[in-house]
Image (cartoon, rainbow, N blue to C red):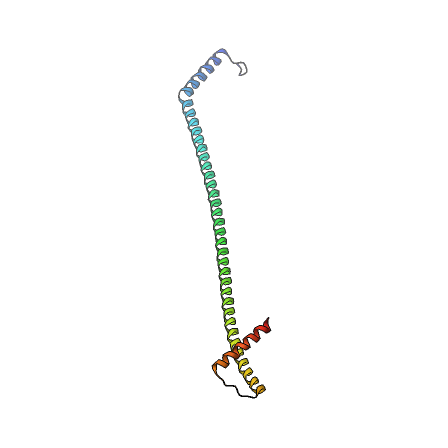
Amino acid sequence: MSLITPDFGLLFWMVLIFGAVFFVLAKFGFPVITKAVRQRSDHIEESLRMAEKARASLDEAARQREQMLEETRSEQDKMLREASRTREAILEQAREKAQAEAADIIRSARAEIAVEKESAMRELRSEVSALSVAVAEKVVREKLESTPEQQALLKRYAEEAQQAKLN
């Protein structure tokens, strides 16, 4: 009896023991093993699903963060544009106010100059009238009376002479 060529009895008992062990394993061992493998497989699949959900959740959070950043940038740009427009409006108002004040100052200065000019002209006419009276008195060598009518007449002659000179 050799192991390479076993006898029929040895072969019978080997097949019978193998069948019995296989039956016991199939009846009691394989279900436990397959159940453990199935549970492990289910656990791995559940972990993969949870990981996929977590990844999707992270992707959604990243997308929302990017959207918030974009909205914030947009709002910031809008606020900067509004501030720029407000600044330009304030500068324009200040410019217009300064121009209006300058125009008022120029207008009042011109009015004051005109008043001063008119006052100076009246004073000059009065002096010219008095000088004319003095000159006429010396030329004619007769004393003129300083009556209001004569003063008015001399003023009128002086104004006519000035108008003639200006024309």
